[in-house]
Image (cartoon, rainbow, N blue to C red; front, side, top):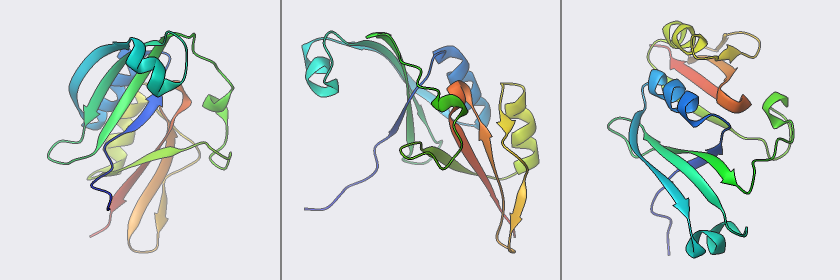
Length: 146
């Protein structure tokens, strides 16, 4: 038995419209948007009577998907991870390869994206940065150097 693919990464957000706009600005495409609820969702999520709205974003021309989730029930919990540093256990980040890091950071800033510290160069291979996106998610950006 072998893994077939990474299907998606899910991120819980407090403002689904803002999160969709942010990741659309990054270049992802909205694949679909729907409400998730019912007995099957209870069994998968492990919570009674869950109700959420999801927006599935996809990388154009690639298999990668990001599932943005806004919970309506049970009420979303804010444990303060939106301001936690990158080394908190269990806190994850999503990284994207981009063709123009400066332009991408500038565009995402208009949607609330803020670079954690600075854009850096890693050897002769990449320019990199982490920034905070919607709901405090850490988004990594990498521009490969030619």
